[in-house]
Amino acid sequence: MPDRNRAGAAGLLTASALLCALALVLGQAAQHLLDMQPCAWCVLQRLLFLLVGVLSGLGAWVLRARPARIGATLLAGLFAVAGLAVALYQQLVASRTDSCLLTLADRIIMALSLHELAPSMFLATASCAEANLPLLGIPFALWSATAFLLLGVALGLVLLSLLGRGAAAPRS
Image 1 (cartoon, rainbow, N blue to C red):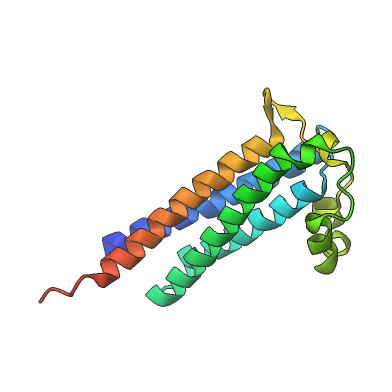
Image 2: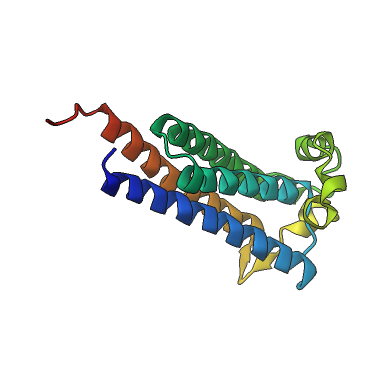
């Protein structure tokens, strides 16, 4: 892959990693400074932001071989799509229920023991209806869905770039 294309892919992957870091910092700030407590679906979104961010960072800074970068980007993109689905589920379904105990989100977080490893980030302390408070008039889950959508688009562009550039025959 030419250096210009590699730099473009690395730049989008870096931007994706930074967006994930920003989302995680804002989630922590909302919880600890604004007392916006997370539900299990919020916590699952945090995990997905963390996974997308780590994979994007690996793809940008560590993985130089094209197949490894494609793999990291593809996996990050799948986690971004999952994050979008989780955020939309929280907004459209879970936030309309009084309780979200022992949902798929709870089972995933408990199976991974994340609530024990990092409780300040992964312990759900609110119901789904309580957790989806508006921030600047927009429900928190929709902010998250927007971030995951942007990540999905950016990672899709990286994949297209990586796959498209590699498919062309080399010039002599």
